[in-house]
Amino acid sequence: MPKNTRPASRRPGSPRRRPAATTHLGNRALLALSGPFTAWLGEATTSEEGALGHEDVVTVLAESMDWLLKRTRTTAVGPQTATRWSADDLDLLLSEVDSPVLTAFARQHDWDDAELVDAVAEAWELFLHFLEETRRWSGGEEELEECYAALEDTSADELVLAAADDVDDEEEDAALAALPLVAQISAALADPGAEGVPADVLRALHELELADAADGEVRPGPAAATWRGGDADEVRELRRDAVTVWVLEQLADLPDDVAEGVAALLAAVVTSGLVGQPVTTADLEGLLPEADELDFDPAAVLP
Image (cartoon, rainbow, N blue to C red; front, top):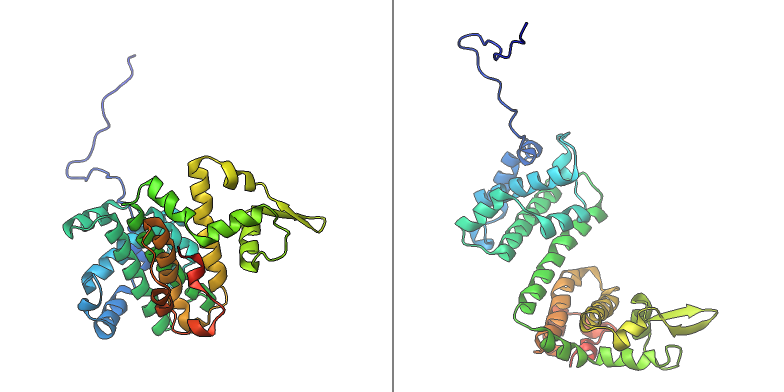
């Protein structure tokens, strides 16, 4: 007997089964917060303070949160999900966010990719302030500060990348080679254990594996050969890292009340090397009002 291959009968008027709609995790996580957050925005900010209006802030926040939750967590989203985040979460969001909704939103506002990232960072910074001021933040104080720092670091990264877009490799190589820091490291590699090598330069040597300490003796490290004679891309990357390591070393002990200038200072120093148009010492010290009280010499890294 032939097998019946007819489709199964369906009762008249009964709906066809449709695939379940994809849950919007951002809206779910913000279900109890979007109203209070919108009200807080109206009281604490004005639309003129940033690139986004209040409604846009909520839209960008919800869509970016949806992308982040789907990338990093299960669908088990509860009332506390949106009240605690990590710097790693925000680093991932700001470096990789790829949301069709946000892309379309950016197109409507005539934003490029960097401007979209800035808008996402602005929305999240406002949201973190809201959680902090309304005592809804459920993480630790240190976690919150790390989240703020992640958002600030992104602004610095975008500034550096924007400057680098207009600089070819030869110009960048020449600008980096002109830095006294690079000359100091090259000289120190001749004898890393010699007296007179500045302590911060020596720490950079060890951090970048340009020098290695064994049996109480300091020798050139595994990366030294690359610094001296690697291909152009490898040397360029090492020199960039050297500037970053040196600057972060100088800023490690800054008092809390100047911490907001860290990202701006790092961006200014690195960008000056990239474009070959260094800012002045006065410009850099202007970012740090207490610089004259610190053991910090921004001129040491400038051409």
